[in-house]
Amino acid sequence: MKNVSFSAACCGMENMPRHYRSEDLFMALCRECSNYGANWACPPFGFNVSELLKKFGCLYVFGAKVVNPEKAVRTSGTYEKSVAYTGRIFKEVKSALSGLLLTLEERYPGGLGLSAGRCDVCPACARIDGSPCRFPGRCRHSLESLGFDVAAISENMLGTRLLWIKDALPEYQMFVNGFLAEREDDEIMKSIESYLEGIGS
Ligand code: SF4
Image (cartoon, rainbow, N blue to C red; front, side, top):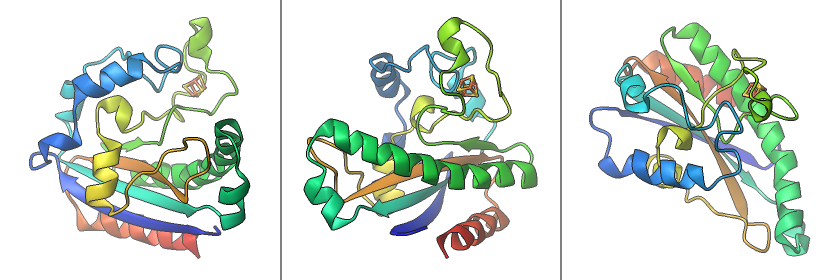
């Protein structure tokens, strides 16, 4: 993949700094989002998030930093055009990283892959019509939907500050995915690094 660099890190759930997760803050933000109650990957959930997280001892995170070409930044013009440009990249990166989530879940049973953003497997989520998820095996929650502060995690664990689209394309974009594992295991990090090396070359 062009103009993309990857990074990965892990943090024990017990020692996780308090500011990496705030369920109340992110639930309030999720309520303001159009995907709230309209996408099965997003809240409200039919399970207790804190209870779910008790099953896991370690959070692995991996990010893809996509540097936008200078010309695209210069000519992006409006928020809408920037979002459209980002959407294409987001799809490509998300699809590359979802392969890693599936690989990790298969290799390390009991773990749970966390995607970036809402689930976009279907053009329109079945939840909008009140129907069950069409592909539960492919739907993954995001870090933020479980209350994790992706901005703090990206900056502190992956060394990259998140940049947001305002009225133009930012210099770069960062896409952060995660994997909750029952315990810390060097083999998991090796698997992540080797996969990222493979898609980065
Ligand atoms: S797989 Fe389809 S129905 Fe299920 S959460 Fe994703 S978009 Fe919605």
